[in-house]
Image 1 (spheres, rainbow, N blue to C red):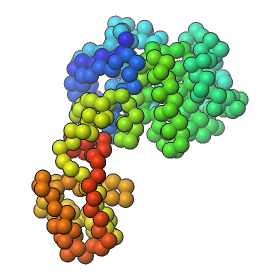
Image 2 (cartoon, rainbow, N blue to C red; image 1 turned 90 degrees about the vertical axis):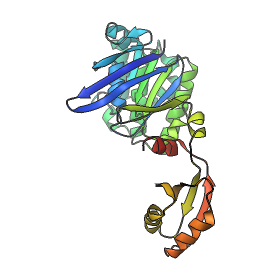
Image 3 (cartoon, one colour; image 1 turned 135 degrees about the vertical axis):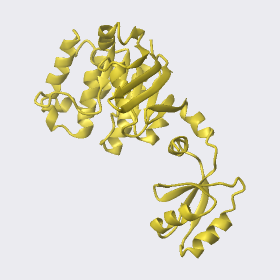
Image 4 (tube, one colour; image 1 turned 120 degrees about the horizontal axis):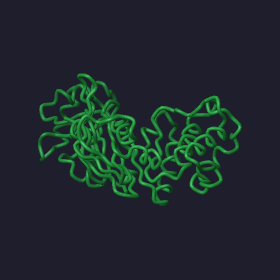
Length: 300
């Protein structure tokens, strides 16, 4: 009753958006599709929700084939696209009533499913959807996607452009929905959100790089990572790029994440090199690898 994807490929003229994608999402699982813009996340979501037809491969959602049982899938899934797509001239309550009516249900019938979300926007039920804040629009869209009690929920970059507090609230809501037995497939470009999923698939240029739990993916990073900081970030990055033993370098918040070619890394050697380049207040400290570190490594 989850999601099964086998050898899915899709092209748009000369652009191959998906390249032989295969993975499964277990029933009741919170599964993350993690990758940057243009990686193929939305294309895959549209195939799974029967809005696009794949060039090759097969897929099933909630036990239904995406081609032969597309009507059953549309009645069994909730889909929240990346762009706010509700009726902006209708009020909050009118939007929710409209979507409930389409699926032959009522707000009252499934209110228990959306209650935790809807109570936060209920004070604004008479406000037009177009006049809501980003976080409120997000909660309304999720309520509309849930009102018919779907078996599988698709969320395409649901927190893009939303403030950090609303992002945290949203993920708390997803965890509560998962406890109700709903299978959730969520895509995001935010690597920090990957750690909140049961399992994740890292995707880049239409190809799956790795699939596993966030903990296992991070555990198998092949190199030690070091936080490096100095008084001039631009000069620091340029100096590290020119360092003969450098393996990988990229900015990470207030630090540069640095990996060395040598397993027997000597921080004093690197510090001396950076001091010769004119850098001061140098800090070099080992740190734990993150999902982002692993993604950058796999995407090389």
